[in-house]
Length: 362
Image (cartoon, rainbow, N blue to C red):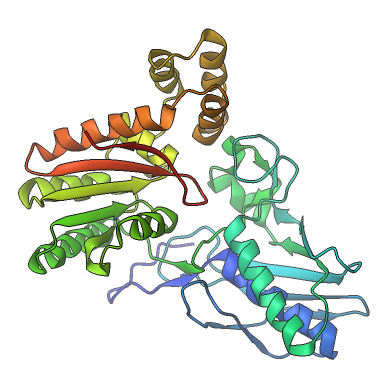
């Protein structure tokens, strides 16, 4: 596929999770009423209500399958134009919604991910969207929402070779991802430009305390913590350097950096670009910091052998080593060195549920 380079403003798209939710809703509705609609509309976590055209429509006595062709907008996503197919099968009463990996969808085989070993690689965000969509139909027709959901992506196993799934121990295909349901087109220049403009807007509004987050979970958590106005929030994403270097020239009084353990640990190790394709967490270095905080040789070896930073954190947490505080302090040092003075900095590390697990404020 040739790279798409739009001359106009970048067009947003829909995540695999949003596509799966729409297909699941369409399939479940067809099971209940005995026929398909041509489209399916879902409610996304932030209130948007996109409508999806259906491709595949197969209806049986106890199961139905629908599919959606993913439109990733102007993002160079490997799953752009992939078919996201969902089979919904009636299950025993009280089972709720259960998930299965069909062809082209991966299965978790190593610890350290938010999903347990053996689970289909369908993340929490998409599961919540799917359950909400199925719940809508269940309420509309006053029926139980006890179904088995199997997601398939034709060609997904080949597409997964272009991702980090193999290294993470996800085998057999792609992951079903997406927190908000919306794909923001990936463009370093445009994203960094938006960061700079966000700083400008905040300064013009007289904002003295700004929070920059790596993702939606940490942004929500820091918003609840400080009750900041929208224009005091910066969607930093992976571009810590793009933010910090700009603030060196345009300092503010106070900056809160918020994110997950893995990304902010990479910042602590000196990486200013936190994207997985351009920086990696050094587990040997992480083990060294844990040793300095009191980890024994056995724990240090567990950290070095961990599949992910999340698994390494879990090992430290079980042993009572406050590694998230250690890495928050390291990230703060890197941030302050990059800023070269003029801004008070704190770093907050949150888990995937938005709970504060590490902090450094000097």
